[in-house]
Image (cartoon, rainbow, N blue to C red; front, side):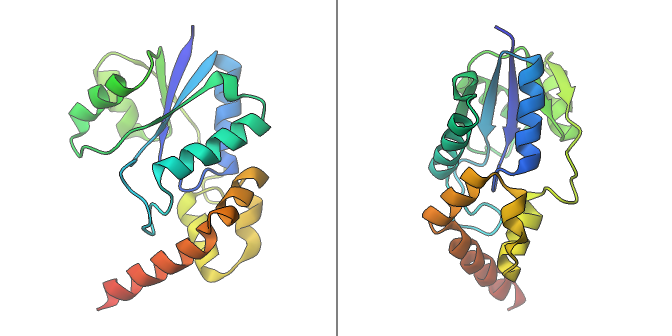
Length: 177
């Protein structure tokens, strides 16, 4: 089984992420999607809980007919980069490679002997969780075109759009004091 690890926060999962998953599935039999910062939720940077992201991605991957080729594993942060690699590996199925657009992540896994796949982000100025959350805060509907329909539908269902507006405004207000 040729399996690749794909870590990210996915706050939210956008069309750029989906394009990466599609590319990786051309090369690998399965993808282990590591849902990072699993202990976070209800903050501006990490508005969705790990459980919500698992549900969001389960629905999406079922709609995309690839759910049988994807593992969804939540992993909390431990704030020790060198130990993080073994922490992740202890919580996931075996993998042959690690794919990321983050050079630091690639370097950490390369250091422990893994094959790494550098992901070229898909239109990073357009597809960015930070940008999507900012568009939501500003009240722009443009964010909807940046995430798969299933993700937008799920975000609305759980009150995620209102949550992002609330927590981001609250955090910005506290930071100004």
